[in-house]
Amino acid sequence: MPRPFPHNLLLSLIASRQAKDIAKMYGLICEAITTDDRELLVEIFRKPEVQGLPAQILEHYLALEEYEKCAEISKFMDEIG
Image (cartoon, rainbow, N blue to C red; front, side):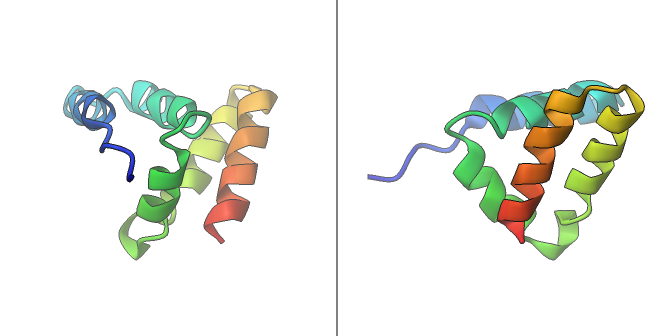
């Protein structure tokens, strides 16, 4: 049985984007890639329109020296292909 779509995640991302809170949006995505939502995000981030976003998130966390998050994002990027 397929996992239900994570509506709360989507609504939080939209709210963060509207508030121009990019750091919060990146945090939500980073958190989601370590949960059951990872598979869905892999599918989403394989789309050409958003393929560059994980690299932007990685740059953000490199600048903040949050290397654990960088490692997760790197693994996620490898999974995307």
